Image (cartoon, rainbow, N blue to C red; front, side, top):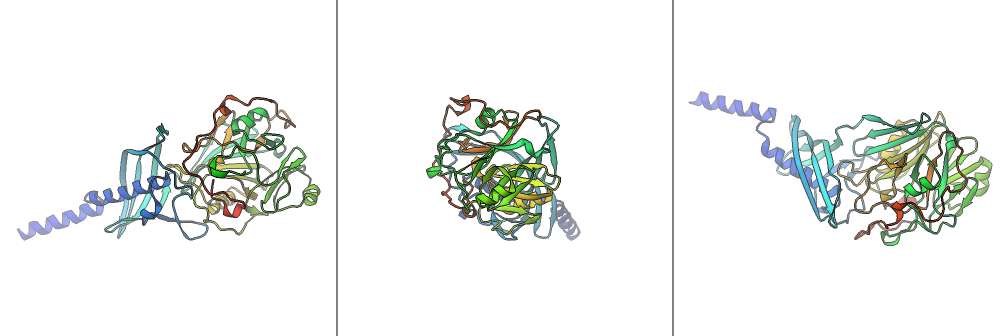
Length: 415
């Protein structure tokens, strides 16, 4: 009898090591993972989600995996087909690959199902805690269809976000288009791209956005379009100058300095992520994980436009440090962070490439960085006038709350 008991004990221990007896532990870990995903979607107060933290690779500080725009109210959330496959279990560390779908709704509007695929390491115990989390596809890059041979469009998977990168071989094709000549109102990104007959575009400057209901008017920071500079050279908003010699210059410039550099187009926000090949100093984690937009240039002179998805369960978002690391990995020598949050948008061939924040919808923007067709020069003025395209007929959905307005890029909250 004692022999049988010993054999049974040894057998159970072996099963535990292979994960077959860890169903209760796995359920606790899955429950923690659900809390994490609900927090990303703004449904759970992060203060009530103790232990759901990850480390920022740039600042080496603990960062809660949520955006500062976290006071949104999701009316319902559903997990479907959530499964966990054990990858390893060593000591008190359990690593699981968790897959499934997450569906949330807001004001009776259902968002598209998010496909979850994460590799998560937990510190086991009475209440398991998340030690690290990353998208299972992290490190992979997929090439997408680009409008012509002079462009390259890629989908890049990082640990905590998905980023779309549009590389423009000829920098003279990249220019800035304003939504309105008087900068009094904005348009949605698709309308700006269409009005200028561009093949692609991304958002650029921020704007005054009281109550989260800004119309894209009252932009902040310098805007330059085909040699015409508007809105003043505000030193609070670092600039990206597209120059006549094909170079992209980033930093704070006076009007005279911009003239001497041969600037033809300009946008502004900040912070500067990379200058002359070196990552700049900034608070890498202060603004949390959010959608991000960046303009940069590599050593070959190609312009690279980046838009990172965020505030989605399948792409929580990027910090400044995350974007700076990505820029460095892509070989960018100069790079400027632009307006983020739901303003972050990329349109290619008339279609929006990145995800849409279901809670805020498409934003009205003051301007956009545009890419001219390969066979044509950038238009000096919009090709269309009067009433914008049909997608602007309806205003963006109102939200119950919005990120606090920020007057300086350093305090950006990912609005």
